[in-house]
Structures are given as structure tokens and as C-alpha cells.
Image (cartoon, rainbow, N blue to C red; front, side, top):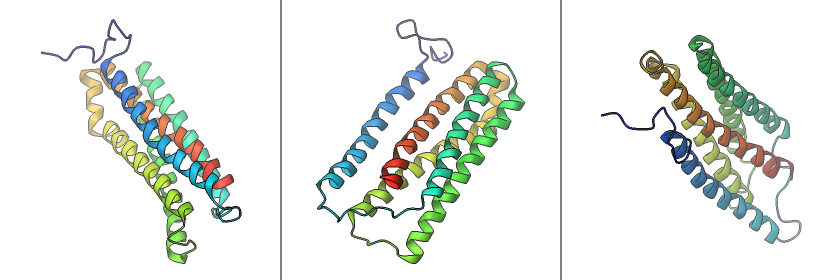
Amino acid sequence: MDIPYTVKPRPDTGLYNAKIGIWLFLASEVMLFGALFSSYIMLRAGAEPGTWLTNQLQVPLGFINTVVLIASSVTVVYAWANLKMGNIARARFFLLVTIACGLVFLLIKSYEYYHKFSHHHYPSTDPYWALYFTLTGLHAFHVICGMVVFVYFWGPGASMWKTDPERYTNRIEVVGLFWHFVDLVWIFLFPLLYLL
């Protein structure tokens, strides 16, 4: 027996099951990151004047990472659009570019981490650094998770295209929604941590 509504939309919501599932999951992610953002804002607002660290990060690196993630969101959309048009080869190319963008992001972030840890440019008990490493570390973990799923659907998972192309297209759309959320989180993290 096939699971209903894996391809066709549910009559009550107009969405297929995986899309409903990812929206519910992203709602929980909003609460998680919202709590962390709120912690940062409350601790910063409550800090004694002149005690909160600023200008501790390399803004050009953060800006490059922002551009890289925005570009990766565009390539995910291109991958999905090519699947809708039936062009798996071009879709896989854009998935590969998306994976490469994620890798570039992680390499830049790891360089920043290495620079902070190797030169010990941070007081280990400072709340700014605790929140910086928590927020960016959790975000990087989400980038890695998204990349793992994209690698699967680029590689062995692409065989689904031969047996059920519409379902495969839906899966790329769902992972793409997760990826857009991860990119959106970074768009908020960049000014909060690097610019303000």
C-alpha cells in the first residue's frame, strides 16, 4: 500500500505530506533560533555600557559567506525548476553548485574558528563569544545537514528520478525549503554578530 499524499496534494491543505512536515519542522527551528537570538539581544541590552564586545569579527569574511549562501539559495531554485522541466542533468549540476557553495561557507567559517582558537583572540568566559560560537556553530551544523541530504539526492537518491520523478522533485523542493531557512538565519546572524 502506498502512503497517500506523497505526490498529490492533500485536499484539506493543498500541500503534500512532506511539505506540511517541513513547514512544521521549520516552525520548531524558528523557535530554537528565536530563543537564541532573544538571548543575545537581552544579554547585549543588559550589559553594562562599554562592556559588550564589538568589532571582533572580520566583516569581509562574513559578507562573502552571506553572498555565498544567497547564491546557493538561487542554485537550489534552479535545480528544482530544471526538475519541473524534466532536465535531471542540469538539476544535478545546480545541486552540485549548491553543495559547493555550502562547502565554501563551511571552509570560511572554519578559517574564522581556527583564527579565533589558534590565536586565542577571545576571553573564554565572555557572553559574546559564548553566543557567537553557539549561534554560528548551530547554524554550521544545519548547513552540514542540508549538504548531506543534497549529496544523497545528487548521488544515490537520484535513482528515484527514474522511478518516481515527481516525488524526487518534491523531495528537492522540501530540502530547498530547509536550505532557504538556513540561509535566512544567516542573513539575520551576519548583521547581528558582525555589524552591530
